[in-house]
Image 1 (cartoon, rainbow, N blue to C red):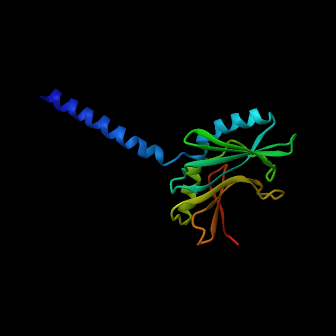
Image 2 (cartoon, rainbow, N blue to C red):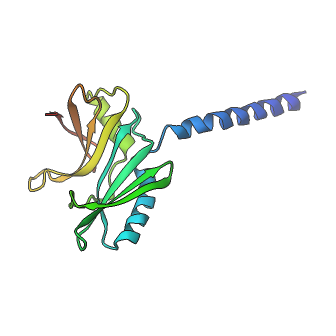
Length: 175
């Protein structure tokens, strides 16, 4: 009898996990999850390609998104290359003009940690938010990699998080 109940419990656990797993996967991935695929694609494009920007316009409140765009720059070609990754797969690549050229150090905090820090400092997230990682404050003592997070466009507030330390840097009004 005990064996029968244990078997039923095991079956119910497996069934519950199987039913819930697609829901968890549907939530999206963090920014670092697609980085390896994007880098591999960029290296095939140009051997000197380096990451210069990472962004999503539809970030969930937990720092995950259905799609992340990784922007690379080739100094030799003087061109940019966008790689969109969704659900662990490259869904689009695009050779573009170079708008960002400063390389991002790949040892950055992930999007979930960045948005958690921004929310601790008062970021209001209503629905989807915008997240962007790139080099900021060039030529100043604060130059470096930063996450720029906009939780609500109507509110018009951007939170800047240091992508190396994970610490809040500043809040600014969008204009």
